[in-house]
Every structure is written in C-alpha cells, then in structure tokens.
Length: 119
Image (tube, rainbow, N blue to C red; front, side, top):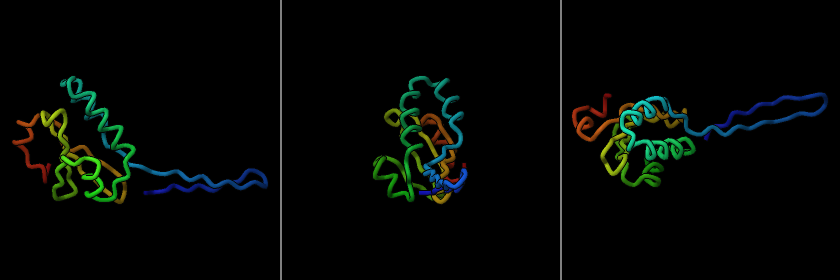
C-alpha cells in the first residue's frame, strides 16, 4: 500500500495528513466505450471497476484470492472473464505503482485472435 504524507502547520498547530493510495485504473473510458457498444456488459464491468479500484493487490496471488477464475499470465498480465466468459478483459498491472492498465476488452472470439502477452 502506498501512502502520500503531507505535513503542514497553521500557526502553532502542526498537522499530518496520510492518504492511502489504492489501485488506479487507466482508463475507465475504454470500459465505458465498450459497454456503450455492448450494454449487457455494463453492470459487470462497473462492478469489476469498483472492486479493482478499491483493491490493494501486491501480487498475482492476491488477485486469485479475489477472482479465482482470473488467468495470471506473464508480463504482469491478468485476464478476467466478464459476463460468464462472454467477454474478456486483459489488464497489465504495475504492482509497485498501483496502476492497472486496460490492454484489451472484447468478445471471446476477438480475444482468441490476439497475443495477450504483447497487446
């Protein structure tokens, strides 16, 4: 977990603010554009986004504890099944910086045509 610590004072009173940094997902717009074209995926993608935004994953094992059906790949890639495996969401995670990059969202048929390790 990353912390942003800010020290400041007003008069003779000193304050310390600690902000806990959870995962930052880049970019939600990609998910939104997809669910606008595939409205049946909207609720599950929103649920995934909310859960992932609040997560504090430090390694792939912690993802598997929360998402047992997630596929852990090389290059810090993870594949999530959306809507009963009708859609696939591929992300790349920088565990140290707490960033999740959306690399691909599409149908299972589209997913079969890509190289998830390089996309």
